[in-house]
Length: 258
Image (tube, rainbow, N blue to C red; front, top):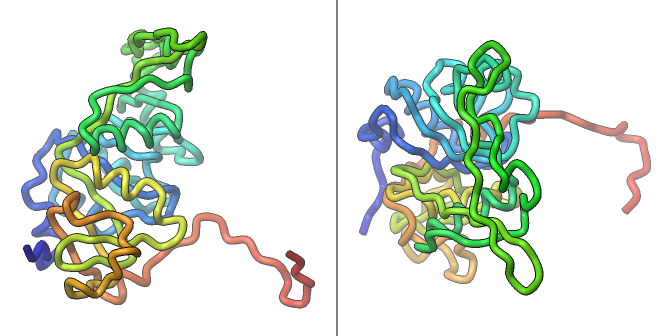
């Protein structure tokens, strides 16, 4: 089945307002910027986003965030996104903050058809006991707090119940993909992208290099095409547009040691 869609705008054309959306990437690495921009251009609002973070600088999900298009975020890291912090503390956006490993496993579980699982992460904290501020009231008070979660004992240890995540759509970015949706991710871009793709009912992948079926060694496939419904081939300019969040360098004449 040829899953290639002519453009990013066409690929996201049926994403409705209020949709749930899983987005791959970590910081500026592996972020599906072209698909996110297409959503912005389409004017979609009220999105319920599941992603490690909500964009950085002026790229990624920060584009939708700054425009007020995101209603709720489930993620692990606010980081240096001052606009995200402002909206959250001002009661403009809802945030479910969870441990990073738990987020990864919730996405994987959802993609594998596992409704819930037990983990020790968060036991004895507000993650399990409830009371985390999901939404502030704008005056410093808590308008919506997280509910307590089920905790059970297994072999002498306590574990908290976490539910798998499935979403209406997923947006991911891959270094290479074929027309059947098989994907390969480059280095650290293989972060949340495979997991995000698994969790989406309709997964849309933007790929830096599109090859014909058979052009990827089966042993090199990081995510099989069964999890991908649409593929968008990036232009050379789009594929090369990769921002650096924090540029660090050393003098060329300094000795580099292993």
